[in-house]
Amino acid sequence: MWTDWTPATCMPDSCFCEAVREGAVRQPANTWSSLAFCVAAAVMAWELSFRRESRGLRPVEAACFAAAVFLVGVTSAFYHASLSFFGQWLDVQSMYLVVLAAFSVNVDALRPGRPRRFFTLYLGLNVALGVLLYAVPVLRRYAFGGVIFAIIATEVLLRRGALRAWALRPLWAAVALQALAFCIWTLDTLHLVCAPHSLLQGHAAWHTLGAFASYALWRFYRGAS
Image 1 (tube, rainbow, N blue to C red):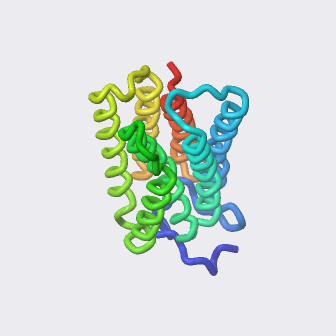
Image 2: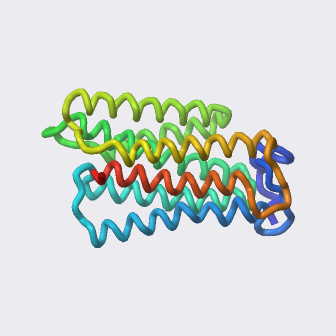
Image 3: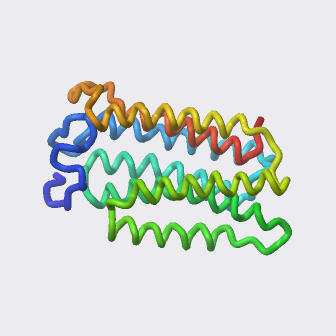
């Protein structure tokens, strides 16, 4: 059913290890594992409803972060189901929604006591990167790395300026989980550990670990120990 759609740049034979099937769901394991992000977002929403205390996130920031994680799950599932260029763009853009939320929160925190423009900054950065990803999709991973560097740099500035002092344990947990996920992602992408027709896929593990990492990052920004 996806043959009339513009294919993803990984097509026809470089879309991770999992074999491409016919039908509505072209990569079942990679599709359904994406919904781990939706589960993580549901937990975040529950915490917003019943555990309102937060040292690091204002309501609009918390809502944007949780919504971004939910959209990662939905768009990633669509991407792996369709393996379309539109699905690829949505998937990568939603990943930027998460990391740009973290960066925008840090920039916001660098200016305590001044009018905050979190949402304007967040929206503007996402629009700019969305256009870039559509026009030059090959830059998507380099741009992602640049945002990660910017998050680390602003976190260092916050620590040096004594503007953030709570425990780093959830942040280190997020980093460790994402590093493990990236190692598995690499093995899967390069087909070094690969069983194309199995439901146990390295890229599916990448999704699951990424969802846990997103929740750990959420706990860090909420000021959890």
